[in-house]
Image (cartoon, rainbow, N blue to C red; front, top):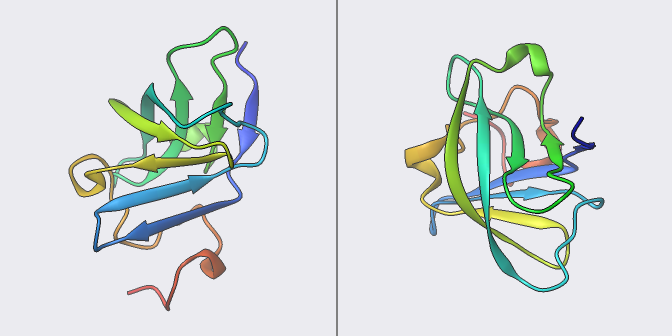
Length: 112
């Protein structure tokens, strides 16, 4: 069974089309590209991130497992801080809209 960790924030940066997913439990010893699967709900919102490489293969939960409808492969930049950078996010997830599984406070402004 995969260890599961909750995301502490999710932030979309439109200028770079980057979705930042932060967790304190899953850290990288140095910035590195990692293979992951992104779990999406029926609307395309991010529900979880599952690492495909490494012995522990942690799962970072954004929403409940019951919301997962599909999985999409991606490469992300895992940072030492525990932050994952999903580039070209608009092609993979609906990061530019308020994620229904994330508190309002992690967005730079009111959701649209």
